[in-house]
Length: 297
Image: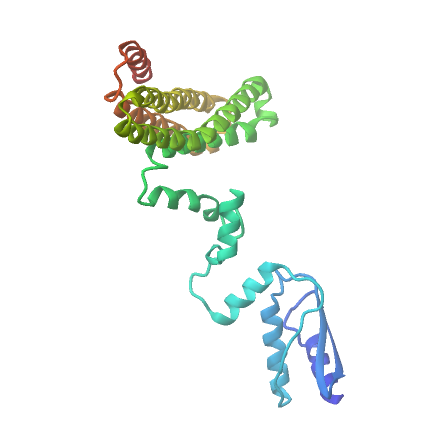
C-alpha cells in the first residue's frame, strides 16, 4: 500500500509536464497498481506514460510486471507505442499491411501521409505489366493539374480583393471540377481499352474473321487519350486565365497546374499517335490527325 501511494503520488506530481494524466495508486493482488485516465494520446503517448511509471517504480526498487487497457484505444496510439519501443528507423504507418490494404481498397489517403494516397497507383505503373501505362498516367497527370487550378480558384473566390472576379472564378472552378472527374474516369478507361485491344488481337490470331474487332477496339483506344488531350489543353487554358484574377502568392501553384495539364496533353497525344499505325479507316485517321494538329497549333 505504501509503494502504491508513493508511485501514484509520483505520477500525479512528478509528471514532467504530462497533461491529461491523473494517477492513483491502489493495491491489486498484492501488487501496486497505477491507474490513470489518458484522454489525449497525441499529446501524451501511452509509451511515454508507461516509461515514466517504470522509471518512478525503479526509484522504489520495483519494476512493472504488466499493463492493461480498459476501454477502447485509437489504433494510432498502439502504432506510436510500437515505434517508441522498437525504435524503428524511418517508420511510416503505411508500412503496416492492414493500412496499405485499406488505402488500396478505399482509394483514399490513410494514416501515413499523402504518400499513402498515391503510392498504390504509382506501384501499379511500376509493375511489369502493360496496363496501366502512359495513357492512364497522362490522365492522372492532367487530373492533378486541374485539381491545382481548382484549389487556386477556390481559395480566391469569395475573398474581398477578388469579388469583382466572382463569376469568372466560379465558372473556372465548376469547369475544372468537371474536367477533373473526366480525367479520373479516363485513368481506368485507358487501361481497360488497352486490354480490349490485346484481347482482340489474340482472338484475331485464332479467328481471322474477328479482325474487325481489332479495328474497333483500336479506335476506342485512340479516342480515349485524344479526348484526354483535348480536355487537358482546355484545363491548361483555364488555369492560365486565373493568373490575373487570383492571389499572386499562388502563382507557383498555377505554374505547376498548367505544366501538369500540358504534360497530360503531350502524353495523351503520344498514345494517340502510336495507335494510328494499326488503323486502316482513312476517314477516321484524317479526322484524328486534324484534331491532333489543332491541339499542337
